[in-house]
Length: 402
Image 1: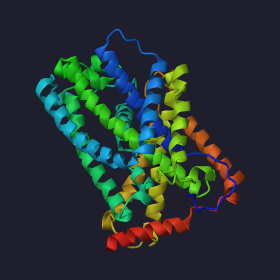
Image 2: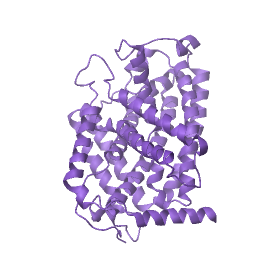
Image 3: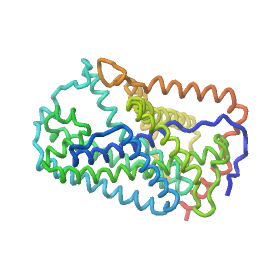
Image 4: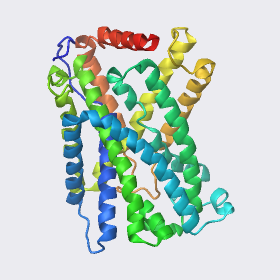
C-alpha cells in the first residue's frame, strides 16, 4: 500500500546521521570479524578491499533478514540484550580473575596523555568522546514507534531504563578495563585493543577469540537494528514528502517498506568503497555519526525544554515528572559540551591521517540543508503528515487505557 502523504516535488536528501551510524556499526562488525581472522591466522594480510567485502556480506545478509524474516528481529534484539548482560558478567569474571592488575593509584590518579595534548583538561574530555559513542542511537526506538504497541509509554520507558542500566554497567566495565588493561603500549599498538586485553588475560587465542566473537554477535544485532531504524525513518520521510514517494511504498506481502530498507544499505555500500582509497576517507563519513546525533539531541531537547517552560506539554502516559526541566537543561549543556570536543583533533601533531574532519563535513551538511530549505523545501514541503501522527498517538492512548 502506498503512503497517503501528498506528493510534492522536493530537493531530496537523506538523514546523514543514520547513514553514518549504520556505516559505523557495520564497519565495526567487519573490523572485529577481520581481527578474529588475523588473530587465528597470523599469516593473513589485511587489505582494504577485504573490509569492503565483509561489510557487503553483512549488509546483504542483514538486509535480507529485514526483508524476509523481520518478525524474528525483535527476538534477536531480545537475545542480544540478554547476551549483553551475560557477556558483562563473563568479561568481568575473566578479567578480574586472570588478567594482571594495575593499582588503584594507576586507575584513578595516573596521568597519561597518549594523544599528544599537554593539557590534562583537553585530554580528559577527548577521552570521554569515545565512551559517548556507546550512548547514541537510543532514539532508534522512536523510529519504529508506529509498529510498537503503547508506543507513547513503552518507548520512552525503554529508552530511559536502558540508558540508566547501561550507564551503570559501562562505568563499572571502564573501571575493570583500566584495572586489567595490561601493558599500555601493547594495547595501544594493537589493531583491536579489546583482543589484546583478552589475550593478555586468557593467554589463549581460542579463549580470547571466543570472548570477542560473542561480543561480535551484539555488534551484529546493533547493525540489524540500525538497518531497521534507518529504513523506517527513510520511509517516514518519503511518506511525509521529504523523499520521493517511491520509497514510501509498503510491500503488501512482506508488510514492510522494502525500498526504504535497501536504500540506506545501498548508500552505505557505496560509501564503504572509500576504504579502497584510504581508511581516513571513510572515517570522515563515520565521524559524523556521534557529532550529528548529539546535534540532533541538542535541538530536540531544546525544543522540549521550551515547550515545558511555556506550558505546552500536557499529560503523558510516561514522563520525567518534576525532574523533567532539570534533566532537559542538563542534557542540553552536556550535549553542547561534548559537541565542542568532538571537533578537536584526537592526536597531536595534526596530520592528514589524524585530522578531525567532523567539523568541516558537518558544516557542509548544514550548508546543503539550509540551501535546500530556502531553495526548494520551504515552498514545496507541506510538513509532517499530522493526520498520521495523530492516528499513531490516538492508537497509543487507546492501548494505554486498555
